[in-house]
Amino acid sequence: MNPEARRMVARKAATRRWIRARFGAPGFQALGLPGGEAVDAGLAALARGDESIESLLVSLAAPRLRREGVPLPRDVFADADVRLYRLLEQNGGDLAHARYLAYLRQAASFADACADARVTRGKHA
Amino acid sequence: MREELTRERLVLLMKELARSAPRRGAYRVYLVGGGTAVYLGWRRSSIDVDLFSDRDVVFRGIQEIKEQLNINIEFARPEDFVPPLKGTAGRHVFIDTVGAITFYHYDPCAQLLSKVVRGFQRDLEDAREFIRSGMVDPGQFRSLVAEIPDSAYARYPSLSRTGVEAAVEAFLAQTS
Image (cartoon, rainbow over all chains, first blue to last red):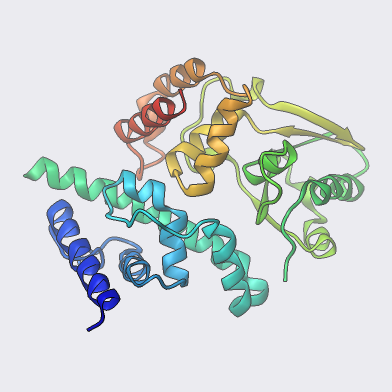
């Protein structure tokens, strides 16, 4: 395994540990949070440095996700909203805007639920 | 491929909305979010423009206009996402009157709250501009948020007063 691949594995493991410590599960999909699967995929893609729908979604929502305790790398994609829209446009044509808005709602919904998951966990702890 | 919304296209949009509006009557149309940011020069472009009017008939030509200008349009206002602030109706900012339509920036305090609560990359960039430009006074904004009655939160089950006020305080601390 080359050094970059090793760093990637280490980053993913650190992310899982952080999520488990804060939320009690190794990933957000396991918690059943809306959009958790996309966020898990986005975090994994960011750890690899891949530009994808999910990594751009996580990037554009980064300040809010950090606020809710989601472990994000220091560097995320800049201008992620425009890049996400353009990527959706490549595949979705006229539906790109509707899909873009749906992704924004999903990210906001995830963040809202995330806040609640942490608070709920804190109350029960 | 849709064009990004620039100030020039926004002005064209305003003209086209006025052209397609019913001839009788007077209408108010509010710019929200990216529209406000682009019109005021805070950023060069936006993926879309958010519009609101209390009289939907003013948007009867919107599909044609959208295709003609090749831009993305959404109908939205801050209260779709966050509780209403006291006195919003008196804080809309006049932009221009074109034909039968008077255009306003939607209440900057309400826009700011919506952006701070969602808290995405672009939201926070725009939010800082609301303060930097002087459109929103931080003290007044803090008071308005504190005055939101508990009953108003009942319509926004994904939000909590604690979470909203914490986000507002964190934002104001960063911008002061």
